[in-house]
Length: 214
Length: 253
Image (cartoon, helix red, strand yellow):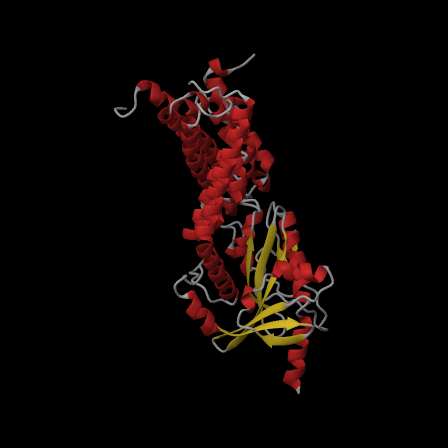
């Protein structure tokens, strides 16, 4: 990568695999369970978090020398909340349809532990550009897991991807349904998201033994 | 950094300045964008009412599509012939009836006041639609909708929306396949008693072909949202029954 130094590039690539916020740091699990019943919702959530974490990290990084350490968590919370609310208001005024799709996610973004975690662990101690890359990297890592989970849950639970039927019609019994296949309604329930995340963690740790803790 | 950021006085000043800055920023954003947001909400209501009576841009099996925002005002005055407000059993015309806040009216009824009931009369292809707004509780937040009926209180179309149901589960009440299921369902028994429609699990009618069972097929994984839809249909539409009885009396006289 010509644009990024090797050290900077690692900020993006690390969270995608060996330092993934969900599977390794086990942060942001709540939203991973809540909204991955559909691929579209997973994707939207991924993009929304990327936006907030990217900008939030920069803001916190710019303020890092003036934030009193005693109240830094509150300051971080205010920054996230203010950012999310402003974005929500702007969307409501200029892209009303989009804002309706996103409204459910607003609360989930503010309380996402990944955002607070990155502010605390990275942005408070690093320069804006590196903080920005860290934010993008971590939200990409988050989005990847969400999309994998969303893919399996929507495919096996509803037989669709992005709302488009891919396995045939379950009521008319066409496609694979004519062979006696049934949608697994359990896949739509939050526990299945946890099980899929567990499977991802299993695969990841058996491929890279260094990740296994005692 | 020369500044001592650990001092108590610094912390307090920082907190005050931060609150003032963020507070005014949010207030400024809210105030500047308010007219735009209000206008969007107003158009959305008109779009929703028109959607329920079948004036929409739906194509084939695709997603729900409203009439476009630049056409909605014209279409609303073209298709909605009368806007009524029913208060104490008396129906009066009111051209701003669609702006009535159902939440406030429900609260009024609870504290002993009289609830104003908006009803929109629409005409399309020679057919008359009576569209009533409903509102209730889902799993996480409010759910609401509009139900279009004919003069016998047989459902001719619905629109449902929600503030924060779970995407992929309860949020699917906003999907076409769920709304379309209500078409042709009856609200009254043959004897004319209000029965409502139940969003039922295991009604053995997933294609929803049986139209006189007072049931539509529930959504997987959305029991409480479905129950909320049942409740708001039964509670709010019941209030409109006297109006329809009156209508019949007038017709037979």
